[in-house]
Each structure stands twice: as C-alpha cells, then as structure tokens.
Length: 90
Image (cartoon, rainbow, N blue to C red; front, side, top):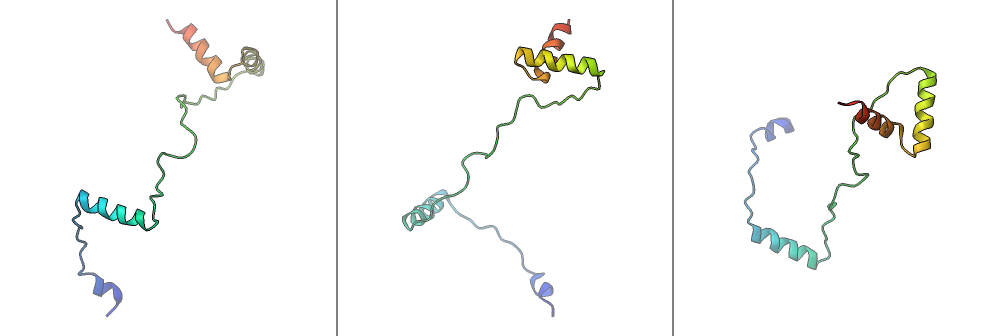
C-alpha cells in the first residue's frame, strides 16, 4: 500500500477556537518570549496616483521641446502632458 492511498481517506476538520482561547494562547506565548512578527503594514513604496503610462511617438523636435519645457518648469514630462491636456479639454 502506498502512502497516498493511506492518506486518501483523511479529511481536514476545522478547529474550533474562541476569542478568549486565542487571547490566552497569545498571552502565554508572549510571556515565554514569542512575539508576533507579522508586518503591520505593506512594505515598500506607496503606489503613485498616476498609474497610466503613456509612451507617445513624436517627432524628435517635439520630444526635445517637451523635455526642455518640462525641465524648465521643474515638472516631469507626464505632469506637463497633464497640464497640456487640462488646457485642451473643453
């Protein structure tokens, strides 16, 4: 008989635990030096509100003009395009 056949009849049974039991187990664990190490917040960089990336193909002169103007204004090229779109929208 192989190992997989012997385990085929087993079924997982959910454990019943109350809030008080979980609290008591946590207190005992903390008293013995065990601490919760789960991260409190998601690690890493916060997501940017600007999530849609555009990669337009423009003529070289237009691309250079956009890059120079964005640099002159202290903006990214995407922010400059957003400003241009706001001016264009009716």
